[in-house]
Image (cartoon, rainbow, N blue to C red; front, side, top):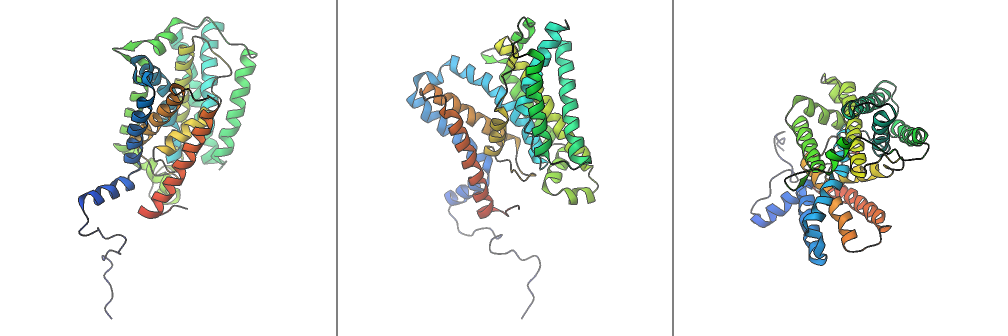
Amino acid sequence: MTAQSSNTLTPEQAPPRGQPAAARLARKLAESPEAGVIVACVLVFAIIAANAPTYTSIGNLQVMGRDLAQVGILAVGESVVILTGGIDLSVGALAGLAGILTAWFNVNEGLPAPLAILLTLVVCAGVGLWHGTMVTRLNVPPFVITLVTYTVAQGMALAITTGTPINGIDPLFSNLSQYYIGRVPVPALFFLGAVAIAWFALERTYVGRQIYAVGGNKEAARLAGIPVARRVTSAYVSSAVLAGVVGVLVIGRMNVADPSVGSGWELTAIAAAVVGGVSLFGGEGRMVGIAAGAILLEFIANGLLALHVNTYYQTVVQGAVLGAAILLDRLRARFFGRIRR
């Protein structure tokens, strides 16, 4: 009996022969989580638009653009962390605290708005550095250290304000959040900018490829000479800084810094990432899918309001979408690739 060549493909790996073009296309779509979520965006938008006449109005689309910046920018930062095999539960609370700090620097300390924003982003970067250091140097589970920050950030927001919103912030904040370029809200452009920068950094640079490698197998990445600790830390810093950007945009939109803002946003960010095809095991996911996942969640959330569905059910729908996304991701991995344990 002749030995089989090591280059011979197994039946699962061999390309299908004689398959119709439609079947090949269907298989390609099934293998690509990005394609699936983009198709879902189109279908959800069309179905809701057909049943809610105000859904496609210019005013409502502009509202969705502003909301998308809040969800989408957090999702971009969260996704970078998940790609390394970690998780950041603090992004929502940190965004809320960032808004409070910016307003406090501006109103209570009398700092100019640009300097207040800069100081807040530096503080957020320090929080991200702390997360990265604890995870890489002391092997603290990401879930634990970011949950600690989540709790501390919420408490600090209440302690700084004593539960009272901060009023009288600089008009620059409103300009950032409420102005338009053409008919496009400025926050939506911030979201597009964050997606473009993250896409370039992750998919077109050596550092980005290293981040994927770290998420795929930390030990193999270390043996290959990749600075694992630096890549993981940079992911947490990026997530924290983007949370700070969201906090600044939110106080501009509300024209007040409210300490109750931010609760639950981390769930939305994680849901957008997972719906967009990011594997919770790390190392898998693309920025196009992440952006589409954030857009899909926004279409659903705004659509429920347009259809006059009770707001209390929005969280239920969000949880159901997240659960369905995780289930579909595992099924896709089982049938079209190797399951990562």
